[in-house]
Amino acid sequence: MGVHWKQDQPILLLLRVALVEQFPFLTRLGYSPHWSGIGGFVDRKTKSGGPSAHAEGRAADIYLSAFDPYEKMLGDGLLRLFGSNLTALGVDHVIWNRQIWSAEKGGPRRYENKKNGPHTDHVHVAFTRAGSQKQPPLLSKLVRDLRWRLDFTLRTRLSGLETVRYGPADWKSPFD
Ligand SMILES: [Zn+2]
Image 1 (cartoon, helix red, strand yellow):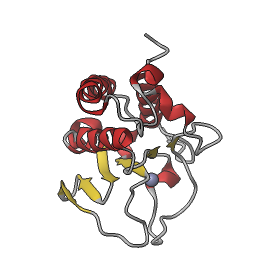
Image 2 (cartoon, helix red, strand yellow; image 1 turned 30 degrees about the vertical axis):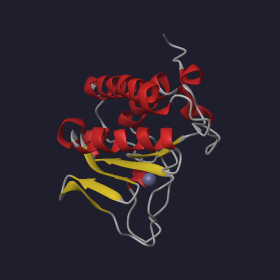
Image 3 (tube, rainbow, N blue to C red; image 1 turned 60 degrees about the vertical axis):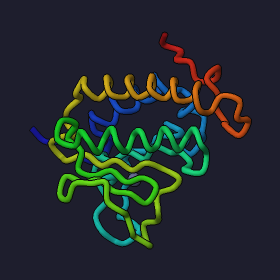
Image 4 (tube, protein in one colour; image 1 turned 45 degrees about the horizontal axis):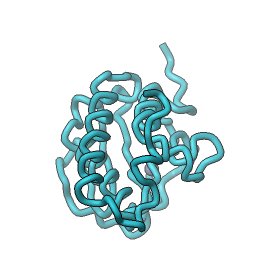
């Protein structure tokens, strides 16, 4: 059975649903006309000229700012979520805020790639070809668990901080 690689693969569809369900503000950041906040298939090479997993629809860019306290917590949480479940989720590598975690070399390790940038404005997660064809329920569960951990952290550490762009009242799931 041939796989059509020039489009978002099944894992990306699940990832978007799971993320937007738990963190609806991701739809409002406005980076993409389709799924603003979470990019996927793009037919291009990387900035350093190598093949991009985006060109096979098996990489996602989750736009968050490492300079926003709440978004950084979510980015850190996602890096750990993908990085500590590489095999179970079929992840090839994940990059965020000058750190990389890969199936090949483990992690987290410092990410130094001047051409591709420090990834302080998005989490890049690439799945293996095999992993990209699956929709593991574990992914939805881990994203849900992450949301509840962040809720608690927000209440205890960030409540009252006016610099937080998206407060708890703003990101209640519409699916609850
Ligand atoms: Zn990317």
